[in-house]
Image: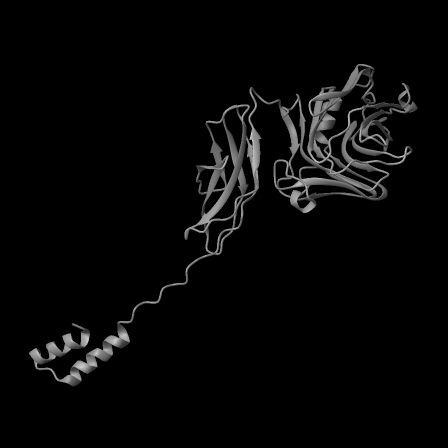
Length: 366
């Protein structure tokens, strides 16, 4: 029985007129309409970025990332370990426990909203926890914020610059985060130097052995004229306490003109009253198209008791012992010695740097 038939039955039994019934029907049509539903939310949150690991132990670490955005609001995140859902935090960090040292893990993160829309997965972060404790880290630069704020100063000369780029924008694989540092000579010659002063200078003044390590990516081999150079690291020392005293390059580390091999130049100059410039070469080619791990082990001394060792991908390639590695400390201010991460030379070429660390011991590799 439909509504009209029901109302007619009521009218007949109650003595109502058909006009009254018609009025009731009209009121029902005007006021009892079916509510209109709100438009469905089909917009997914943005993809999480900047995935990074911190506070590692032999069985745990903390993951963090930059917040996603959504047209209505992000409800939470899903963290995947090796493709399997491992956690669903409401915020932008989570502690991962129950891990094993020496096992490579791959982590990704997605964001979701209350409507069930899910973002794309973040760029993967590969992590291998080390057995035992890490060396004391005094400073590091990972460019996770997409800028150079972890460094103290950038010094450019000629046609060269240091910038921060995404790996995808330059066609290289990521190292550990969403950004890497690009050091490029863009003309026929130039230099770009990134420097970190306080920790390095304090170790130099104390004569304490330091370890400077980083990952470097070379997209192609580099070559130049025999009279040219291309340097990726340097160490300088200031001569005296005189105002604006000259600093000399004690060590420069870079490439040979051909073969994509490396050379270390020891050049304290005659002002140091020790042996003049000497060049040492390695016959091992630097791999291209992959991330390479470099370590500088330097004992800063103002007499012939210092030393330097350089390793590439865990293998020792240079070792100089019982040498003077800086000028004697005679009140130099504000700096005694300076360390530089560089792209400096006589050829247009770019290399990419990530995970730079200053520590009191060797960093684990791989």
